[in-house]
Image (tube, rainbow, N blue to C red; front, side, top):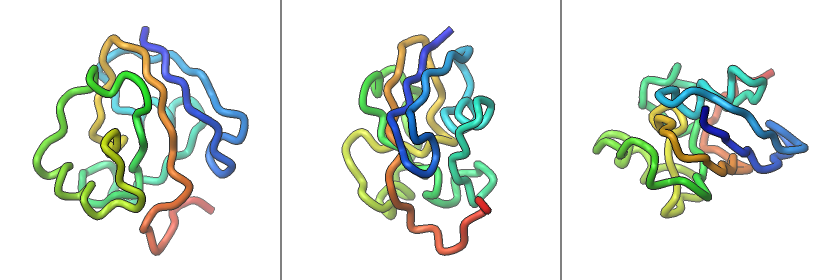
Length: 112
């Protein structure tokens, strides 16, 4: 099992969270399966940037990003070198530390 530490985010997990998942699942699915509601306006099809996250530790253990993901990340709010789309970032065997950005460029939120 891989441990994922989500840093505190006032909207998605105010106290932060530590979860364990099997390798091979996306960061977005791992979060949602554990009660952390990351936005995903395109239904996880790599067509938007609402599920953008920062992978603060363990970045290099993730499956490499595709050209499509990289092109979308260029449009993400607050892009940093350790940015990934959580719907495309597949968890490996190395533990991760993930930060959910405070903002997205989503004009319509699916979260009520």
